[in-house]
Length: 91
Image (spheres, rainbow, N blue to C red):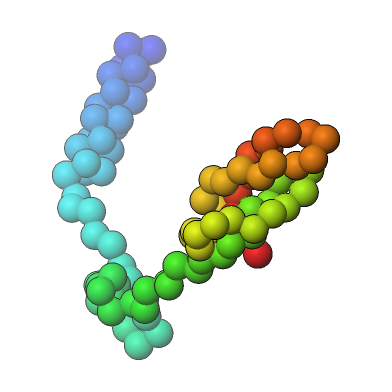
């Protein structure tokens, strides 16, 4: 009796696995006006402009950098009493 239950459970698992993995995967996109439309391409999106700054911010103070640099770029300041401290460009 238990062998029949084990065999039927194994058969049911095999049938379930075969039907699950045999079906094709489909994605549905919803954009408010319907389904099955691909998302817009990346080229159509506006690009973010990089922001530049000249203030080097450290944990002990800030200073002006010589050249403008992108935000979060590494920099260093000479802080009196502490020496050279590393930081990043901020604004």
